[in-house]
Image (cartoon, rainbow, N blue to C red; front, side, top):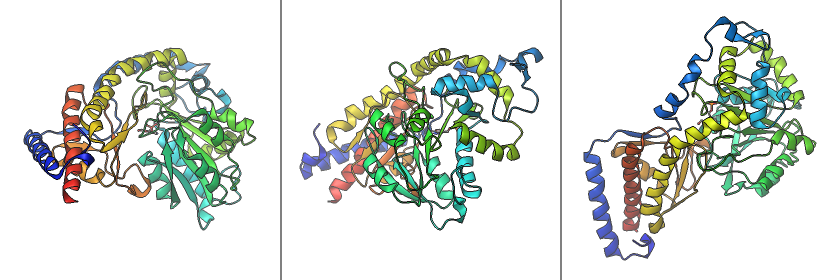
Length: 425
Ligand SMILES: Cc1ncc(COP(=O)(O)O)c(C=O)c1O
């Protein structure tokens, strides 16, 4: 097997016929497979099902003298703050423990910036003519949908193997209309890139023109290694404080992929001044989040060391799935030089960058053969991938046997899309 670009027209025609025949064969199997979203598989849910029974009696429901079955503790129970502060490396007083999803907290921060303004906002964003937001991409589609829904003008920032292109970020924050940036610093969605220490330091040392510029630091995969040991990561709150911009960052995380997605606990970490400001607004919106669930998590996860042990058990389930995806790509696609990808050691995705113009066609072919994947373009603001190149693979949900089939389909469709393009030249 050698690169398609080096083959003769006749060789490409033969290859096309073979790949097309295999595609028809796969299609005839009537598959129904899904690699669309980063959902844990059943085995992972079963792994954590003991969390359902950690609270049995009324006495179990008391934590630090607080009966979690009742109203109160807007910012979360102290034991949960302590646990999350340990996981994120910040202080308990910098933690707000929310409800079942961090995405809600992120949406709410942006929403409050628009309606009320943030701590240092001269004006709520809704009253401004223009709000711009920096979007490292490929990135997480749901982040981009949030800022899109509020009408922000989103600016693409290319991702590099060390994180967002910081030269560009530093230049663009000189514009006072640029109000923030989305970041997934560890095992980014979808590339699985870990920001380098230099990127993290440059981010914390940004000197934006807007006094209310915010770094939306979504640390969704902070303890989510599936290969190797836990990789310590610097606390962005500390770094921003040391850079004299303590209020520039809001960090988010959740137990969605530690315990139960949709039934976990979310967290927002921010400076004490930011927390005080947000508390005033949040206290109008709610009395308290689900503290029963917070305590369930405290009892079940216990502390960082115990949580990391659990993450190693998740890793045992996830590792073969990622290995399967990477093996197929390595064997079937790498020699053809029609796509490139990172080899993540954590997180929930593998992101494939095809030669320009192949993503939509590949995914349409996958759909025809019964494999659903994240839509083309989803990883870019406005759903527009300028190169039509990025495809996100989410291997966590299907069992390995299904994944093998799905990857056969994916590689076949990618080849077919590339050959159709070569033959059309
Ligand atoms: C980067 C990132 N942030 C947030 C979420 C969702 O988190 P939650 O369930 O806490 O809303 C996901 C889920 O895929 C994600 O990939």
